[in-house]
Image (cartoon, rainbow, N blue to C red):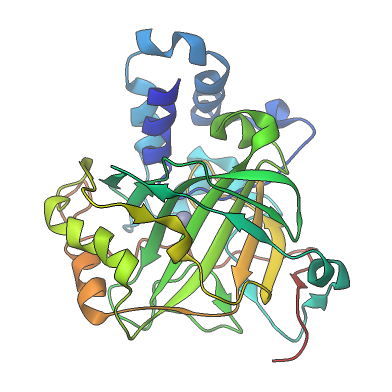
Length: 313
Ligand SMILES: [Zn+2]
């Protein structure tokens, strides 16, 4: 189970989500059916060949298999609660309840954490008990993995935009609701996942993130992994001010694009250095090109409301 889950997580490099009542009815594509089987037959997964993984992997960021084409195999992508979106700050609604119910992070220090070139992103598995609750979250959510998206130049790379502005990269801290027992089960429930997000600009070096970018030279080829020799303090992915954020219901930003994600997007920016950005761009996609522009552009907001935990600029 764990092993298959990891493979699928790699295939789905970034996970973000939402959606309740009857996902079974909405699983119209073969790939999503395969994805569902992976979850429900997980007890037998060791006997299964990797063909399901291959199908889930058949997407990318180039012209032929890029975001504009994903809906053909993953019709969820045409849903009305997709991510990312453009956050227009003059249209968000301040929610007093968010302000009076602070986010509470309880993150551990990971030993021997595995870092992956997933073929779509750089990812680290969080292998220590780490949780978030509070704010828009009614339950406790387990911190599963961290990954990011970035551009070929520093003026693009984020998935969400703020008043139309793109950032150089976007950090995704992916969590699943503990009441569902595991990530894959949670991914099929509207309150199953939560992705804590930072927009990234190029500036000062980020010391903890440097442990990941230092590993990049050993992760150039797609689908490679290394174990970090030094401890990785997940809490250092967070900034000091945890009170100013936007939240809305959305989806994974990569196939299978399931609508199960409560997004939490901090207003404060994270900084990484130009050298760290350059290290990311030396990673390779499975097709051999340098990994960059691995982001999905904003999708329509439709009838959703973005709530803010704060007022003012
Ligand atoms: Zn992501």
